[in-house]
Amino acid sequence: MDIWLIVIIVVAAAVLAAGATWWWMRGRRRRRLQNRFGPEYDRQVRRADSQQDAEERLAAREQRREQFDIQPLPEGAARRYEQQWNQIQRDFVDEPAPAIGRADELIQQVMRQRGYPVDNFERRAADLSVDHPEVVQHYREGHRLATSDRQTTEQLRDAMLHYRTLFDALVTDTGHDDQDPS
Amino acid sequence: MAPADPPPPPPPDQTGPTQPPPPPPDGAGGAGAGEPLIPADHARQLQSRWEDIQTRFVDEPQTCLQEADQLVDEVIDEIRNTLQARRAELEGRWSREEQVPTEQLRRSLQRYRQFLDQLLSTD
Image (tube, rainbow over all chains, first blue to last red; front, side, top):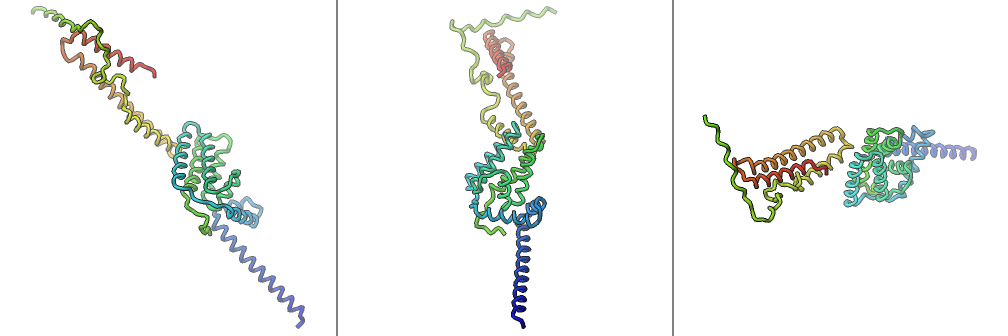
């Protein structure tokens, strides 16, 4: 047989094998990302130009998250934060809007102490979504309510409850950085 | 029927020595004049209950209003009981006997005024 024909067949087979492997690995990544990110996966797919695009973003988030050293709060700190949170809830009765602001600040303090970087809201939500894909939806919803126009007290109360869901998750989270996330 | 005898004159005043008598507020029998209407320990407990209610407003606004109303109602009851007890104590000093020396009446009236001042004070 012609040597070139053999070469072509071998190269074609290799290309097909590579393609199949690539296809299989992409499927695996897709399932992994869907499992890990849950509602956040769906959200990103809705907002992105393509499913591939969304998956690239989420994979990038995972990689960024790997750079952080996230630790749980020491017990004394957790109790202190909880007391501060309770004070913010009391402050809500006197001035609801500033209380929401302080609640978000307290959340950021907890995040910083646990090892997350300081950053704008979208970035913070993205970083949180890697370990807390369900709870981060509460953070987003709380932020939406807190920054919308013509807020009623009921909206602000709702925002506070959403924020607290995230706060509770962060303060009680015993997840260590060395735990296998998948 | 013969007209009733005029009431006998009151017994002679228990005039003390020439120096003026001591002012009425005596701690033991002064009807608690000047003391808080709710003892400090209990007041702290009530404040603590209030703090709990205010903390939970975000979670259950309606329930917290009910609890706040209940708390205030309880405090009103307590204050009313305390005030009535003090009034009763003052009353006991002059109404038990028919012939109360005028000096005692005088001091009792001073205590009533002090009590009234306390009730009418705006702080």
